[in-house]
Length: 272
Image (cartoon, rainbow, N blue to C red; front, side, top):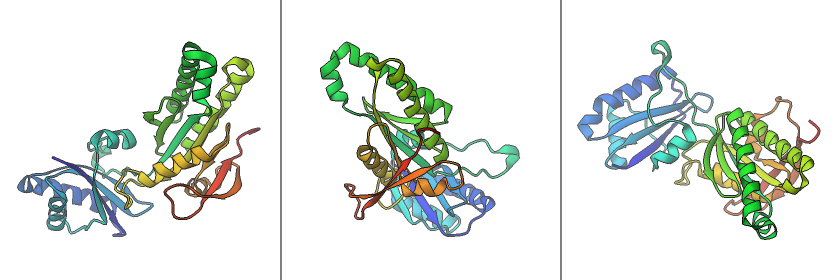
């Protein structure tokens, strides 16, 4: 059966109410031939997201309506592999001492890209360029592990990753740039210039893609950034107020797929 994720907004639900609503869904699921797998609760944004395997969207709506009346704002079909990659699970976590769990689905999304990777292969040849790419991959993955990042996709000359914390994402990006800079200083023949872009958001947002807007904006920021720099979205900057991270406003730019100009905000990581 198809797998769906739905979103419930603005209903002022407590963790206890959400947990009880999920149990009510479970009690009715067999009657409707579906399976309510798990949920995420974002208390800061007053949002709940349910993951359910069902014959169709209308069945999800019927169960919710009969079980507890929490109406959804959006519902979309999703891929289990992508859900697991972004969110880290596709089942209920084990609650502590029977308490309702709070697990926000809000994620920071980071893209990295090696500047001029095609030219690098042409200049250095396959063997040398592959050696550099392996070094880049190892350093990046070390940084992801150190900052609790999840690798979503390896693009050949970069990565897409997700983080539960915007601070972790930015600190990971800074570490990556520092490591790449140190590598180039110690071994000029191994110098690689990276571009990094970071955005953040919730999974279901009217675009029929899991984290679609956040993913697209992070990719656009990465493409717009200069070699050796880190650009973040306004939402990331706002989340890091008071976190002792300095930013430089570079103005707005036209980003493909966005109706309005997008702010380009650079992390001032050098010398910190």
